[in-house]
Each structure stands twice: as structure tokens, then as C-alpha cells.
Image (cartoon, rainbow, N blue to C red; front, side, top):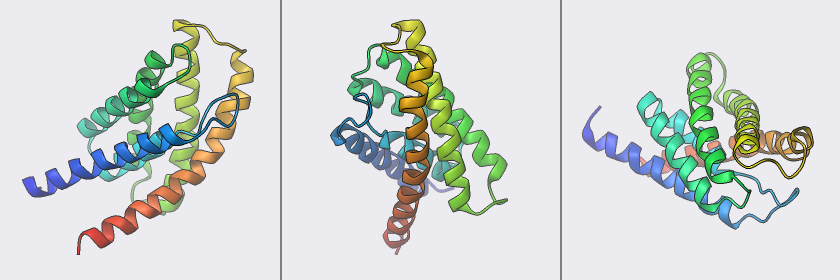
Length: 172
């Protein structure tokens, strides 16, 4: 791959993560003060577009730091970094396993569903160790993570389509 394509890929990834952070930041809290994590969906899309393990780790780290900066959840700073570093690897493995085997839309929906569940679970487990949870683990899992799983599956597909359309027109 030429260096021009490498730079284009890095700029695209940086823009996706920045857009995800802004959307995450401006979205109001919905359930128990928690808000949909658009940055997580953008992280999934960036990993799929990158198709590179080293970039996947970088994407996960940057996503974790971004989420940590704007987290309002007690202990969320550590929880976000740990969860994004683990989740990014699950995304990459799932992407590699499904790549070229199933339609992209279905793959993105499955990754959005499964990896949001992984992210939320790892986040809650990490926070429970670091700072304790304000409610029971099961309550938070059912009240916050489960709705986020469903929402992120849908959001991931919508954002994936928007990004693909944008990339198609920007390459002209």
C-alpha cells in the first residue's frame, strides 16, 4: 500500500473517531444518565475499514481515551480504556472470521450487537473492581447494556452505510 493510501486511511479513522466522540458528547443521557455511545459504533467501523491489527489496537486505545475524557460514570475512566482495548480485539477477530463470508450489513449488525455487549460487560466488571457500582451488576446490565446492544446494532449499520457513501463520493 502506498503512503498516500496509508495517510488517507489514518485521516479517515481519525475523523470517524472524532465524529463519534462529538456525537457521544452531545447526546443527552437516556437511561439512568447513560447515553448511547456513538464512539463505540465508530470504533467498530474504523476497525472494519482499517483491516489491520496494529491499527485496531491504536483505534481501541484512542477510543478508550476519548471515552475516558468525557465519562461521567464513577470509575469510568479506567473502565473505558480497559473495555475498548478488549472490545477492539473482539471486533477484529469477528471481522476476520466473517469477512467475505456474509454480507457487510449483516456482519456490521452482528459486530454491533455482540461487541456492544462485550464492551458494556467489560466496562461494568472493570468499574465494579475499580470504584464499585451504584446499582447491582445485573440491574445495570439489563437496564443500560441490553438497550445499548440493540441500539448500537442499528446505529452501527446506519453509520456504516453513511461512511461508505461518504467514502465512495470522496474517492472520485
